[in-house]
Amino acid sequence: WWSRRTHMWWPSTLVQVSLFRALHEKEESPKGSRQISRSKFFLVALICSFAWYVVPGYLFPALTSISWVCWVFSKSVTAQQLGSGMKGLGLGAFTLDWSAVSSFLFSPLISPFFATANIFVGYFCFLYVLVPTAYWGMNLYNAKTFPIFSSHLFMSNGSAYQITDIVNQQFQLDTEAYARLGRINLSTFFALSYGLSFATIASTITHVGIFYGKEIYHRFRASQQEEPDIHTKLMRKYDDIPAWWFYSLTVLSMTVSLILCTVLKDQVQLPWWGLLFACGMAFVFTLPISIITATTNQTPGLNVITEYAMGLIMPGYPIANVCFKVYGYMSMSQAVAFLSDFKLGHYMKIPPRSMFIVQFAGTLVAGTVNLSVAWWLLGSVENICQDQLLPPDSPWTCPGDRVFFDASVIWGLVGPKRIFGPHGNYEA
Image 1: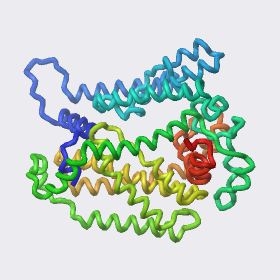
Image 2: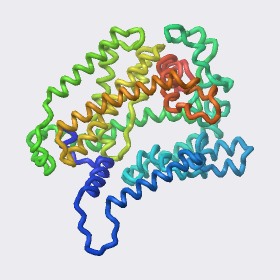
Image 3: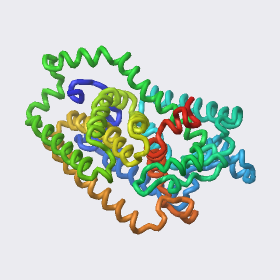
Image 4: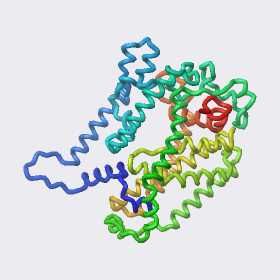
């Protein structure tokens, strides 16, 4: 309903529509014109971008972050903290690798200028004002004892926290061992990032409520009587998706998930009511986050709020926390992607049933391949994801997965009360 009834931008969808139209519409060039065709221009741009990526991606990875400050002051620790684009604040650093730019902003060419400007202001205030002030100016939470920029967990003396020392055989928290090792410490960047993540979710709700609340209400009331736009009229030539397809898929996936939570209770750790709670959170947040995505091309995540909620309810159960986050956060994320794809199909006049079947088949293939590859890598690469045990040039450091693991420790194993509550260092 929301995908069809709203006229919001969905920047990435509009760019895709423009590309498809440009490549498939008939070109009418005057005879004798030396103007290059759209298809040839696209092919040339594609080949050039592919050829260039080999340079920073394989031949000369240093181009991903050119930190000249580190080169000039190679023996200064402070210069490395300020100038490094990989493990510092990146002052003066620049990149010749487009993937480094697009991974942060999704794509600056697609995002509207007001969104990019907002991100820049927030980025500047956080990274160049808040973090240096907390680290050098105030030594907040003994910040100088730890790296300024790291996703690792640390003991109070600055050494890495060994998670294996505080986990029992049931993969639950050993409270005696935790009391002996002491509280977990985070880098300044990591701790402040978590703190501002709460502000992100809160501002998403208030922003959508203030600026789009009336529109949501009126559109919902008029959804059946509203005069359809030209896109909806043209799409009526196709058969719509039967409602029972969605209901059946929902019942099937929920049934399988509930079976996992009950039959494999010791392995999954997540109770049946936790699964329903996670799905409820995803349902509530999908609409406001979809609106933010459609207007700014930026998608706030539910990872922190889901981890926090389950960490308060069931502290000491890291796998339950991870499963709750996946069902809450990823369900919402996939729903937003699903809406975006259907908006694309709506603009391009693709039959809805074909869209549904392709989505369903793609999900099965992607899930199976992802699981198979992960299983293969975990069994074939020695010390995978353990960057302290890997060779310096190893590509298998898994930074994203390590953050995911550290989050399961912070919110699930140890629990938010022992880190962000009265028994931790970061209550404020």
